[in-house]
Image 1 (cartoon, rainbow, N blue to C red):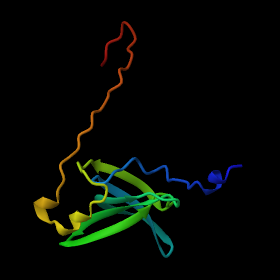
Image 2: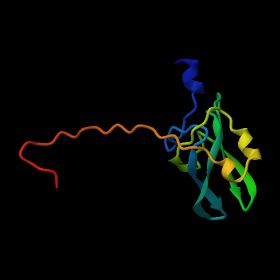
Image 3: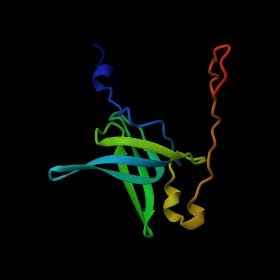
Image 4: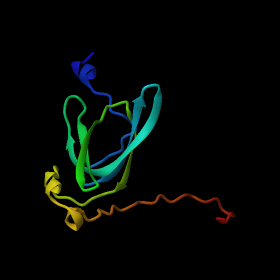
Length: 129
């Protein structure tokens, strides 16, 4: 048995491929006394940190004029789902400069990726409905 197999962190399968500048919606499982519910946090990914412990990503949003940042570990079992709503076009890995911007300046252009549609083979003699 190799030592790397023992240290390898278990990444949460509910987290898709994300990058800095993406607008994401994180569904976090919250436990309050005896009740359990999902709490959503939607914002822009400003930092992705990779490390031996599996790494983490930081999401920033502005609520009532106050910037709020929350850091989520990649291997947390409390992360129920992470949805990528929009891909932002960036040239940096860490977007700390977004903290000093507000309004229209705090927006990023959208990165449009090419979607490759796979051709579905149709049977002969049948037409699509």
